Image 1 (cartoon, helix red, strand yellow):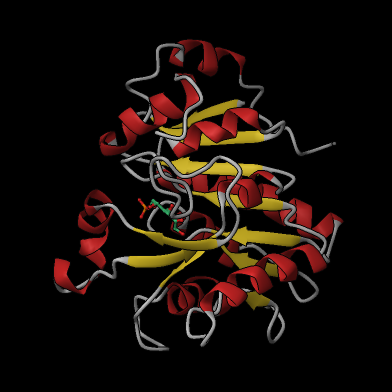
Image 2 (spheres, rainbow, N blue to C red):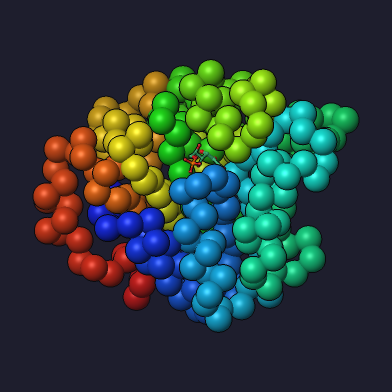
Length: 256
Ligand code: F6R
């Protein structure tokens, strides 16, 4: 894994936005995997100020809440609409999320897997990490081979996400999320984490043993995983100095 320790979320956003811009310029039909939440936002803000065109690109959301009415401002579809689609020139229907309003939710999960496969798979998947070690909404003890499915959020994740809602009671209990097996099929994983609250989860993900107890440890199985974190999120890493000294200053996907 490549561990990149930066000074601020803005610096991380600029770095990853540069890499995505370079990728979409080289491969205009690229497929981008979108995370929702505060960690990915700096990337979207930075991309909005770049000139790269996404007119021929496609994108897939990682996950979505179940139970919010269509168009609810905190549904991940609405957040991505505000933070990504309103800034970038994706075509109509080029950005897809799981259909959590389908009558047959299980069939909708399978259909989402098929849609990702039919698009040729995801070239670059953005990820955040939960304080409990989740990626997507794959909560602790999710199978490392799991596919898109319904999951129940932990109380910890619901408390963490309550900041986006008026009250904890409004945070949905259930979600549809790409599985860990689905995420691992993306050709490049880029995980972002900022702040001391993420330090323990980041250390477990990067330096701990691979375990379903900490789903983000699955990134250790991926041949191209880049972890971009700030100094606070890095405080529990035992090899932080080694990562600082060995990072080339250039993302590995450039020039490959
Ligand atoms: C969001 C997602 C989650 C978040 C994670 C961190 O699509 O899949 O895994 O990335 O909960 O959330 P933030 O970035 O808000 O701290």
